[in-house]
Length: 181
Ligand SMILES: CC(C)(COP(=O)(O)OP(=O)(O)OC[C@H]1O[C@@H](n2cnc3c(N)ncnc32)[C@H](O)[C@@H]1OP(=O)(O)O)[C@@H](O)C(=O)NCCC(=O)NCCS
Image 1 (tube, rainbow, N blue to C red):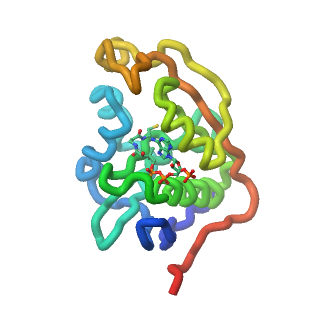
Image 2: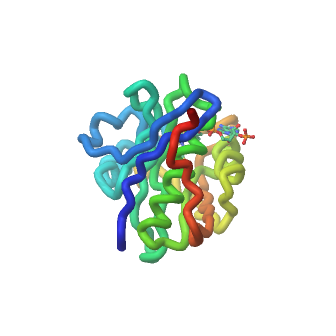
């Protein structure tokens, strides 16, 4: 598989955000990873896997997306992604997903999958707006046995079930390679 360097400047409503592969220690990004992961044990198990794309603005990391192998070799998984609360809602998450699609294509993948909590209706909206479709539901995925504290709720909905979504990514790249002048 050939791997493209995912460096690109992507216009967002926050301005032009640079998306590139993170090469430093993952521990520097842990606070961002924790925004998307309630289980420290689960995070410890996967934080160092795969590739991580970071969105930077003025040299500061404002978002990250971790792309890992999935069960099928032709499929990549968005394992964790988050945008700093101060920068959410400005198109940076969408820019990161766009960069992940380009990386998956450059690796010869044909599909991208992502999982999120059924309780998190905001994330379900975000991923569907980004082009993902629902694939399956894994009941009782978030339990004390997997490191999720009991009683967690999102918008009044108990954190219990995991929803898998997917997207076909084969075809020509549509990446924005240059910053607008
Ligand atoms: C989910 C997340 C990564 C989205 O990043 P973002 O930069 O805020 O998203 P964008 O600004 O690119 O939003 C793209 C679209 O999704 C929508 N969207 C994003 N987050 C949303 C939310 N929580 N609720 C409803 N809609 C949301 C935006 O309104 C926008 O919709 P539009 O196309 O109608 O304008 C970010 O909110 C986040 O870091 N959340 C906390 C961590 C987390 O839950 N990560 C996902 C784990 S599976």
